[in-house]
Amino acid sequence: MNVRSSHMARTARTLALGALGFTAVLSVSARAQDADQIARGRYLAIAADCAACHTKPGSSLAYAGGYGIASPLGSIYSTNITPSKQYGIGNYTLAQFTAVLRRGIRGDGAHLYPAMPYTSYVRLTDDDIASLYAYFMHGVKPVDVAAPVTALPFPFNVRASMMFWNALYLNAKPFVPDPNKSAEVNRGAYLALALGHCDTCHTPRNAMMAEVESQQMGGAAIASWFAPNITSAQNAGIATWSAADLARYLKTGDVPGRAQAAGPMAEAIEHSFQYLNDDDINAIVAYVKQLPANASATVVDRHQTQPRDAFGAVSAEDAVLRGAPKVDRGALIYDGACASCHQPTGLGSKDGYYPQLFHNTATGADTPYNLVATILEGVNRTIGTKHYYMPGFGRDSYVQHLSDKDIAAVSNYVLKQFGNPAAHVSTQDVASIRAGGPKPVIAQISPYIKPGLAALVALVVLVAAIFALRFRR
Image 1 (spheres, rainbow, N blue to C red):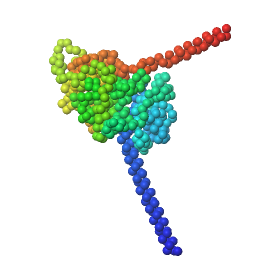
Image 2: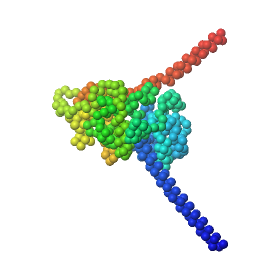
Image 3: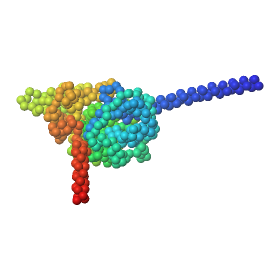
Image 4: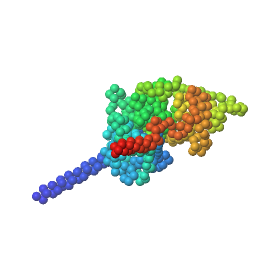
């Protein structure tokens, strides 16, 4: 009995030790799986460009919010999406996190504005949402700082009204690969539409600020900037761009002889595209290259007679004008503020840091929003260890503040000498772009909605009083 009991005890200890070892292996495996999911979520967050909006420029507080996203109705401030339990999303369940991404509904039940691109994120797969959730809950440092509160004018400050907007325009469903497309094109479509939400900037919007699906990627104004047509339209689009051109642009924002990124696109490249692996960049390029020419080109760029990067040539006029008794105001401003970097000939610097002004999409566009916006706001993007910078000449310029008249004059000089001579910039155009770009109908009528409703209520009360008085008589 003693020998048998001893054998049984040894067997039990062996089984117990084996069970502990198996549990330890499972624990290590689970930690590795969690780490892999968090790492995948981090990559997806980069692909979705979450940092560009949820990290205030110049701040070291990642994802703490506070960035004022310009909209025609006013600034919409990004929220704190760190796992802070007091100010962030630390108390969110996976179901609540999913509701934010797919339906635009916060954990407290309030509706988000579509400045948060849930209209694109609704296409995300369940697995990717779970990975994003794992990253934001366990891979992001909590920041206990409150973000500013968005305060749009009435009635847009009534967030519940977004229920009706969503019912009309939130039509997308989780992404389903197209069996008629290659795996690479499908991957690119998912990256561009579900994660990168490229359509939210490059697609025109209707009077209710919803994307016009029939004109997808056909180009649209976005605040002071213009997100160009990126379909295969010959003149207004990017039909002449090679796959290598597009890949280089997404990774660096700089394609000599074609374009340089500024504004929101520079932010997207700085925070997102430059970090994507080559396979994913090539997939996005494959998807974009097969987009059919969009009919919106005939509306947005109806006078674009040749590709935007095909206009212009080296000009010697600046050298001829120097010392002349009467010189165009635009030429004087160019000579004093621009020629030292872009050269009197428009050729740019020898190392390409300051780009050439001819064969440039900013100067060859029929709608020269981006030329004016660049002069006003400058360029500021960091790719890898290289910092691209051009000072702006708007009101906050530390170099030189140019008036609307001055900017219109120098813009027209640049267009005439180096770009699209058919394009023209007026003083009113500059004032509009300086103020945030053309206002859609809904923004134009916004100041009249509240007094209009008050007048309607007063009218109803007056009519009711008249009827009540007649009834009493």
